[in-house]
Amino acid sequence: MECKSGVPYVGGLVTGVAAGLVIGLLVAPKSGEETREDVKKFMKKFIEDAQDKYQEAQKIMKKKLEALKSLGEKIDEKKYGKIVSEVIDELKNDAEVTSEAAKKLSSQLKKDWSVVKSEMSK
View 1 (spheres, one colour):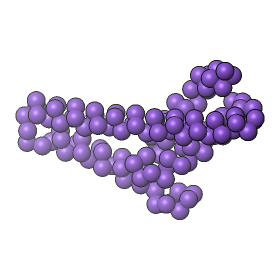
View 2: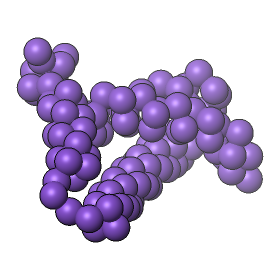
View 3: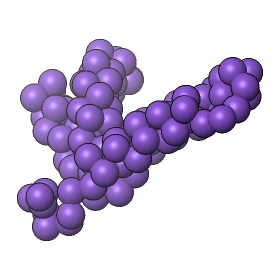
């Protein structure tokens, strides 16, 4: 299966690998305490990676919004949503960003509209 840009779709693969790792940890011949530590480490890294991608997306959004503002363009919620979609499309090309993660990231960026709106009016 391929995405629109022709890059092989790897979201399912990444999700499968993550699920396999968790299952492997749970059935490995380790003590419960060791397994819990492994799961904690895995989840901590997963959360850190998600936060890094969100911050990366915010930086890209800020640059795009500043460029439009410098051109004197008004940015409304519809235009903001279009920019969010562009940023998400850029990040989807990164093999580390799954389709599900991209949807969540898009949702969070769209929720940020009220903050962006107040920042843009300054």
